[in-house]
Image 1 (cartoon, one colour):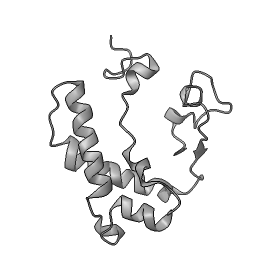
Image 2 (tube, one colour):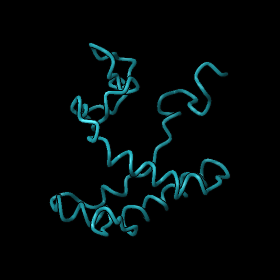
Image 3 (cartoon, helix red, strand yellow):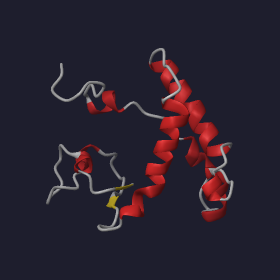
Length: 131
């Protein structure tokens, strides 16, 4: 996995902490930071987040956890397999994957969404320090 140098990813630490991002990440996952002084390295991720926010999260209302997960899964499938991106030659992420990395199984775009709160043993739905 690749992240920016944000403190939420232990980017401000000299040594990785077992209670930080790296200690809680999936075992066996390899983590790399984006190169320093390369502000556009994360541009695709930020652009997709802005699109998903405007097209999905700003428009939907969720009625419980099951409804949320079903809705997110449906939108993810639409986004990855049906929604064409003008800035990417009107191709879907699945088409781009097939062209740029044909050795990868397109089912990687079907990974289910995960609720991190239970996995981390925390309730992340409230601001820090609010109980």
